[in-house]
Image (cartoon, rainbow, N blue to C red; front, side, top):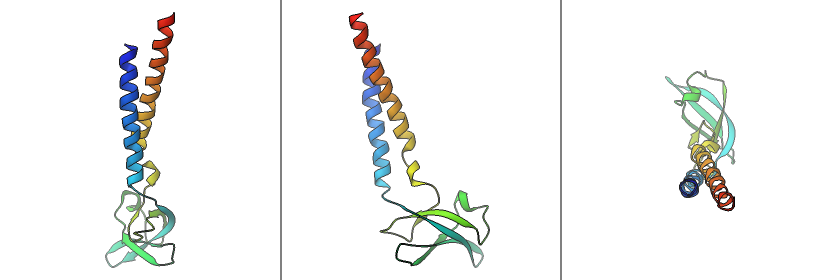
Length: 122
């Protein structure tokens, strides 16, 4: 039984952890800044400055911005290569669930492997 847990834990855990790291890596580097909610005609938008001081905007249609009114501040992340795109949720969360499950399975695999070796000599 411990051999099965060892194999499943180590193989699937390593795969999930690698996929979680890949998801985080694929999303790229994001720069955090403070933006403001602004009224633009009938809609509301998010406006922020990039690293060069240029102003960018995108629609304020995310879950985090629905309750905000024009003039409110909101934290956004943008890419340096494409500063016209922003997101309002933390990019550190990308792949976090996969990484966590991978680490738990890796821990179970290591623990099962050590237990199997100890039981051989007891």
